[in-house]
Length: 350
Image (cartoon, rainbow, N blue to C red):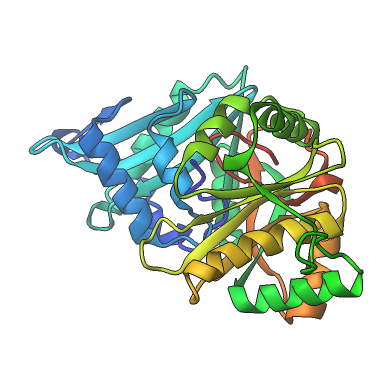
């Protein structure tokens, strides 16, 4: 969900920014609206896919238009009503999470993107909501000068071939003596979310709220209903969910890239078991799969998963993005249970 051209993390921010000034005839060429047609939404999704942001996944773009929390401001060309620039965000609780801020390449440098940005911020009740964006480290200083001066947590990324993750996670779990009772494979037994009973799914929602301190039930119901989402849980002996995760393909079709998110779990063995189960499922149907993993500063992921990926997979983290806010944002997610954040603008977790 929204987290984009300021994107939760991404590397091509500089190409999406318009110049500070506006040409005198800009209002003769463009109009700004606070809604979009289906065709204009389709154009926006195409723009997002073309950017090939590593942290974009198909669930974001499939849900963006349809969530009740989504807001949008766009600029269109007067001559044909075609989309040229957009800011999309989601308003949930006390947060306005700006996910996407894009301008078509041929329209950049005219000031229209900046005009759309200003209009979007005029639509946000800044007394009620804290504005949140995520952007690459190279663009943070620029956005801090605009409307989001407070520096928040940094995020790091790994991009790893699926077979390397499978090998590394398997060796870790075997070393720790964690095996599935049913088939004696490394890792705890997992169950697909689409196979859960109603009480079990309710247990998943309860567990999510325990981790995030938020009621994300409506959003998660939509998220898990998507065909592109592969998700599983672990359960205790009473069949209560005690960990879950998901993996989703990239927005860009044919990229062989998948985003592993979230992974919420009480310990490393459960988190790794969930991740291993999901990556195996993806690798079985796409042997060329490449997995994108993102961790947040101060979380179980940064404190434990970084070490695992270094020692067992041989990869180091790359600084991915930084969170910027309009004023200080309290973190309510239990970071010691957050191995990989959801980082989905449809409902903010960290």
